[in-house]
Image 1 (spheres, rainbow, N blue to C red):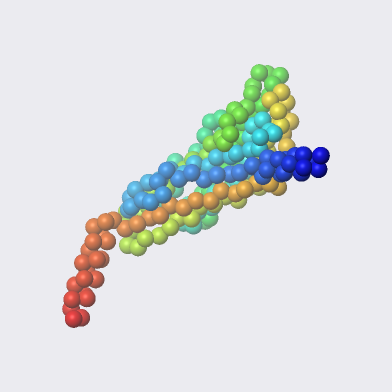
Image 2 (cartoon, helix red, strand yellow):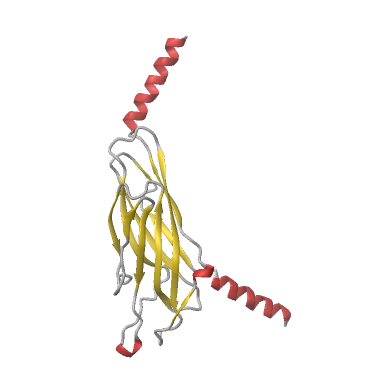
Amino acid sequence: MKTAAILAVAGVAAAAAAQSVDIAVSATTIGPGESSVVTLSAGYGAGDYAVAGIATDFISSVGSTGWSDVALISPMDGPGTSAGAPSGTGVDGILAGQLNFPPAGIYADDSNPIAFWTATYTAPADVPDAFTVDLSTETSRFDVYVDRGSSASESRLSSLREGAGAINVVPAPASLALLGLGGLAAARRRR
């Protein structure tokens, strides 16, 4: 009997820890002028029905420089939502959510995880040195609908795992080859 109770508690703990905001990067390495699309998704535990609402900030080590096409993804672009505003740290104030109102026959999309936000990062045209764009999230609200037949939601913020990712920006191959040839010529001169 003790073993069953321990397994049940472990299962509840695992389900509670299943809440996450994830960062997907379409291209993890790009060159000058190239782009990579970043998508934020929300995942929730097995005991819940769907994501209700999320309030998060998207943190980028380059701030908002180079970011474009910032948008919410349907159906997480419901009433009162916002794709956020550019800031010195990235994009602040992302507010995504969807309705679940069974009396009117409106049911939330129960995709798990569910994509809710996207943006495109474009590297500068001139990249003299390689650098990394570090990405993360800081979430202040993460609510889920507890079941399909109710519009009641509950917070799962206390057990949330935040997203992280990176985009590596490298100089153009021709620039690297010229640097290599320059180093070779310098080495020959020293001899």
